[in-house]
Amino acid sequence: MHLNSHNLINPAVISPQDPTLLIGSSLVATCTVSPDFPLKAEDLYWTLNGRRLPAASYSTLGPSTLSVALARLNGSRQQSGDNLVCHSRDGGILAGSCLYVGLPPEKPVNITCWSKNMKDLTCKWAPGTEGETFLHTNYTLKYKRRWYGQDNTCQEYHTAGTYSCHIPKDLALFTPYEIWVEASNRLGVAVSDVVMLDILDVVTTDPPSDVHVSRVGDLEDQLSVRWSSPPALKDFLFQAKYQIQYRVEDSSEWKVVDDVGNQTSCRLAGLRPGTVYFVQVRCNPFSIYGSKKAGIWSDWSNPTAASTPRSVPGFLTKEPILAFPAGSQKLLVFLSQPSLFTARGGC
Amino acid sequence: MAAADSPSAALRRDLCTRGIRLAGKMRADVLDLLDAYVEQQGLDASASVAAVEGVPLAAVERWDEQTGTQRLLQNLAAYRAFRALLAQMLEEQREQLGEAEAGLGRALAALLLQVSAFAYHLEELLRLESRGVPGEEEEEEEEEEEEEDGPPPSPRLSLFEQKLRGLGVLRELAQWAVRSVRDLRQLAKPSPATGAAPGLAESP
Image (tube, rainbow over all chains, first blue to last red; front, side, top):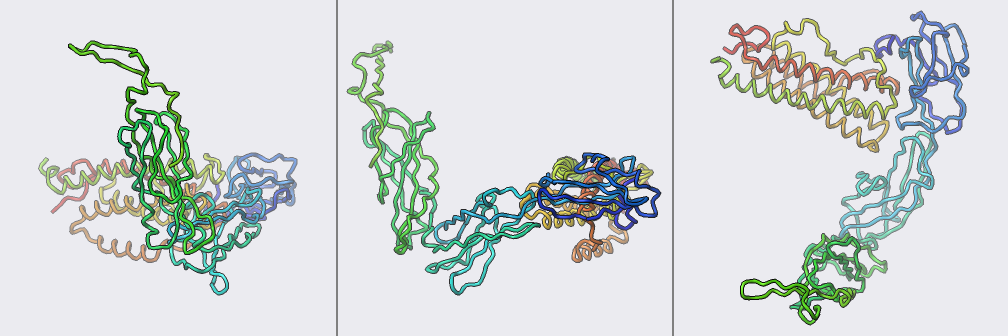
């Protein structure tokens, strides 16, 4: 016997149907077979998520009604609900009920927002201290202009991680915003604290896209790095500071030069001769229209590679370590002394 | 062989070949989605689900006696029904789990697109066949009405019944994908001179 479609008489009914319960609570559910079906209570059994429940938890409440008692329920195994199913003796499904067992949402915390080039706003948050509610929990980011604005609801979720939302347009400058997150599920609603911010205080920009790395004449321990200030902010009054990081080709460890200031070029010194370096630059636009906030670093630019010139003889071993006759000439090979070259940060 | 080499025969063969590929891909995707669906809904993969209202059954008697037109019309009716059923599943999925269950929702949406594309493909085959066949325009009109009206309203199912219906829909769609491959292989065979089954109706 199988569960029939809704146009037919259901063979049985489970009560309660699709209940929502707190973790740790108990439930007594009943399965009542329709009079049209020749099944008795003793012909029935229960499963929860496919596992047969022990007969000791059953009670016969009538000739064709069997109950089951579930104590101290755990959080639902899947957000679509635990499946409590009443079966006939042959395993057929007579009826089912979805149990939603979980916790009400907690107040979302740690709301942080940033605006790319003052054109949009992205915010992310954490779902509360515990996080797991075992139930589908919906998060809604809301915002309004302080004092006289009306509530707006962010529409583009998961753009910067699970708990994030992107507001692409229609944001005003020179006015503070109130931003908050509402969490809701079948067991309740929780609202975060309101965060107050001015778009000008949370601006970040694109990473510098035109980073050029070149040699400094024949200086074998130096490279010159040049870039442009962010074009997207060219019409705005702001200051920018930059950072550079670089590494040798065969290492994953970056060295950071963080005293570049607002220059758009820098000379890296103390590098190893004849070595390929990867260089990245990032920008922090701050003090936009006089904002007092620290600004937010952009992502790092894509790595730009360049190699330092090979060593000049003065820095080589005094004696050649190999010599090959090449026709009438000799090719001499010298090794450089790596200890002489220690990378230095600074511009 | 002259008929088989005609432009319409070549086009028909080409449409059948592409349809077979579409159905094969759809079958593989439905099976993947079935695995994900069963896990997400906490269902037993072997749970027996009886015929659900509105879900067209792939099982057919005297399959090898069907004409090409019958095959196409039955396929088209089935995939139009699946289009409505999948759209309903997608809507219920969003209602229940929001956009958070993006993986399953995306897979359902992708399958819905495949089903729509396959239905369109079948319409192309029918158009190719039915020059002068009465009823084609009426069918298109009916289809337009159906698209405007959306899926027919159905009584609200309990959440558990929705889960089982989804399982039934995906299982039957997987069966239909196999049947469609076989139907299209039959259709791709050169028509006998009489235009009788299994090929398409003879061109004038």
